[in-house]
Length: 140
Image 1 (cartoon, rainbow, N blue to C red):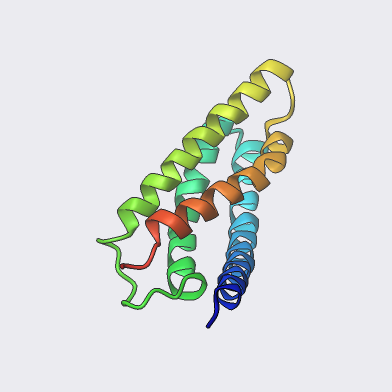
Image 2: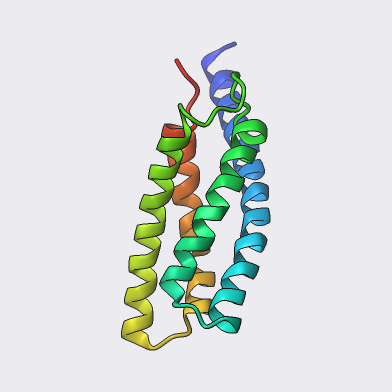
């Protein structure tokens, strides 16, 4: 394979992974969006606590789907090796998300539900990058 073909193949591979990652994320989005809505709007749980709770639940769902379907890692699904890195990346994502969400809500008086909705694309890009290039990166 020449250099141009190799680059094209890598780009296509990343596009496929990103598409699958987006599908997994969409399923997770619906799952966590409904839970976040119920916690914040129905049960009146603090929006930061709600965000952290639904994000942790979503991490286990996405770890499994990304490991098996998106990145198709060779070894069997294992929780000791990559899950701690995945959770660490997820916790960093949640922390950054919570800080930005809190900052915007506190300084603008905006509805946290809709601010979080608008932050989702940034969260997706961050999460894909950390999964692909760090926590779910294939062993060399």
